Image (tube, rainbow, N blue to C red; front, side, top):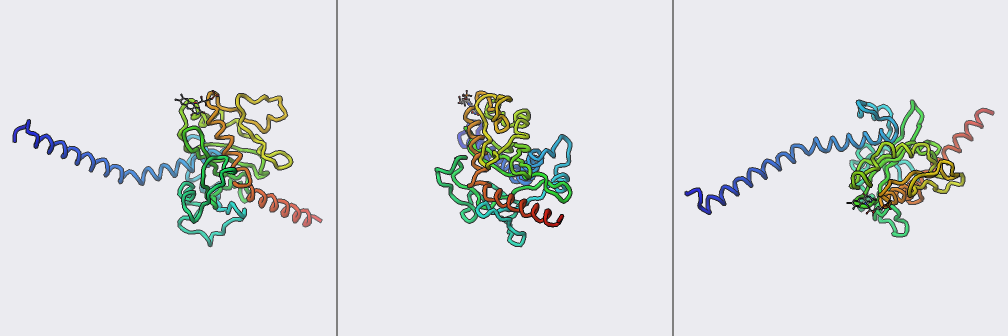
Length: 274
Ligand SMILES: Cc1cc2nc3c(=O)[nH]c(=O)nc-3n(C[C@H](O)[C@H](O)[C@H](O)COP(=O)(O)O)c2cc1C
């Protein structure tokens, strides 16, 4: 067959396509488990980062195992789901927020008037992460997600056990523009959240990501975080998703349970002292 023949050209082209597709699919299949492992490790890293437990060189798995206790909660009742009810899917150690939000058995549609984060559906059960100091919980790390400008942004907020003081905030997945909305990853901006108050004394959500810079002399400064410059739409998305998850449709019922428990415990302790 001559090198210039149409048949030979097509045969060679098809052969090259076949070899390339086999190489690409083999690489995709063989690297999938490594990719999944790295994704999981990155999630753990962000849980630690929100909980102020991450720094370069830290053994992520070891610190996670030592300091983090995941727990599964029912967002509608605020109750903790006991281990005896865990299944392959319904398991805080393997909780996949995206899969759960799509699963008709474990998710619900959010009425549009309540859907501040613009997410459409949400899981009815959620894995949360307790940061342990010995036997005591020092912080709760709560998954949160919602729409930015270009993407759904997934992150974690760390809340003090007073259920008001924000101890950290980080996104582990988003598709906002680097240098603009992508500045949600800027460590300087993330640090601005630490110490801010999510709720006022009456329990109303007050935390707000403002457009521009917070006036440190303002009475509202404890409830405000600087917006990202040139990124009003991502900023608004962050503000909305935080308000959604701190509110009644998000973790509100669980917050009430925790506060009730804290009151009961302190009453018991006071009673014990008498
Ligand atoms: C290519 C491109 C990418 C952009 N990416 C973002 C982004 O990730 N987040 C965002 O809020 N605005 C982004 N913007 C800007 C928005 O379109 C809009 O102008 C901006 O949010 C307004 O913010 P400002 O009022 O602070 O200027 C982008 C604009 C362009 C042209």
